[in-house]
Amino acid sequence: MKLNRYQQAEAFYDRVNHYLLSHEAENNLLLRIARSLVRTPDQMNDRVYLATVEREQPEAKQPEAEQPIVAVAIHTPPYPLCLSKVSDFRAIELIAQDVVQIAPTRVGGLPEETIVFTQCWQDLTGQSYRLNRQSLIYQLQQVQRSPAAPGNLRLATAADQSLLLQWMTAFEAEALGINESSVAARVDQRLSQQALYLWENGEPVCLVGGNGLPDEAATIAPVYTPPEQRKRGYATTAVASLSQALLDRGCPCCLLFADSKNPTANHVYQSIGYQQICEWHEYGLGNSN
Image (cartoon, rainbow, N blue to C red):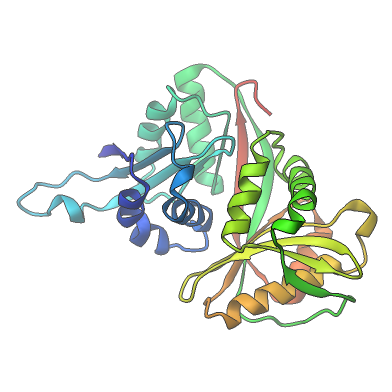
């Protein structure tokens, strides 16, 4: 097997798209990141890590362009190193050996993939690791229930930037454990993609993000309600409304992540029609959180 690094987002996406789509729900985060890098080239910098591991085949029997991928890895700091669903677990050791030099502080992926990686990481570095969070990946193909909290969903605009910055900062700290100054850039990016929405009831009361093109699975994220507006059904209604809008746009399904330790959120998503597909684990590496 051979590990290949990529410097160009478009070449990387062209190479991995088919492999990632073969398990679209499990790989949806990597697909979303790869597509975002292609659509917003300004995100590419020397900190971004894009790699595949592929079986080496005799050139006469199988052209390089057709060599089968067995694993994909993406790292876009400050987010964790993300591992795809892996078809040959020997590939994980190659990835671990390669990323030692960039020293990721966290890794995320399916349960078996991440535990194999963390064990390889410990063997290579002598550093400890710890399970930070366990999430569930949900998929929806049809909205089963449309809650009716008062208000309406609208697309966020540049006029909402101050509020979006405040709420995105709070969301990333609460849900992702990220506290970095680059939130503003991510808000600008999502605004340019028309991927942030507000549920309003006289005033904005909930933030929900989501985007997707026809024939692509849509992703719902983030979902954030400020503490003073919680337990009023706003998030449930906003997620259901945006999910339906994305399905109406031609997306075959909607995908989202939920904290496995948040029974309220999991109940809400299931009541709308989301069905659990798999788990997603995140580990801290070394002395990181």
